[in-house]
Length: 108
Image 1 (cartoon, rainbow, N blue to C red):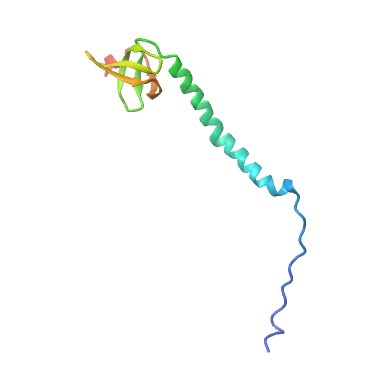
Image 2 (image 1 turned 90 degrees about the horizontal axis):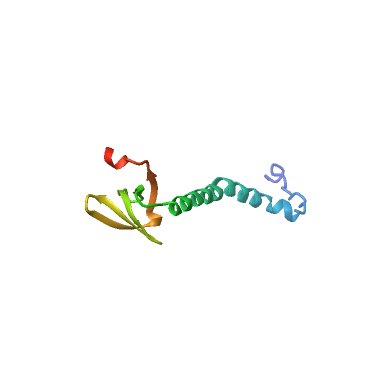
């Protein structure tokens, strides 16, 4: 009785996709990730590596943990940092986040 109200839905003929059009969204997504995520991280890692390699005695530094101090001795992987008069700690070079301007520790 209701058959005349319902029309048949026929599938559209399929169009063959080329391999380029099927991978185009993935390629675009990779390019976006490269420019917004990967490239800035590589640039930041390169800057940090240059900062760590340029550390020298008597530089005033801040570590990732928030320790401020003056470098007393530079080793291959570690630094001896004076955080207070007569108090020295050994930290990894990679934990240095910033080199402070000279005289910063005296103003604190």
